[in-house]
Image (cartoon, rainbow, N blue to C red; front, side, top):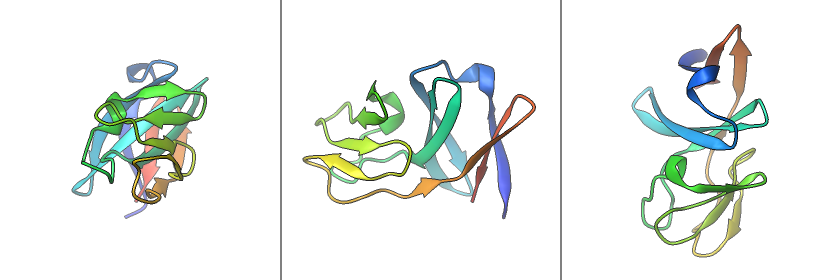
Length: 101
């Protein structure tokens, strides 16, 4: 499928996330100081929306039960996470945020 445009850079404030749908998958795109990252949006513990979670450095905390994941690579960083999530390549073209799927 290649890279797919999912948002404008201006739509995702620094230190925040946004849920996007790409190819039937819900992904969370995060802006960390102008660098963008994407991982699966659904927490693998109980399905919480990670795009609505609290960012602390390069980790996001699930708003439902506090599982933590590294937004750069999807690695589980704290219980009750049930393993790693898939991370996706992100590129910026002009002011478009694109994710490779």
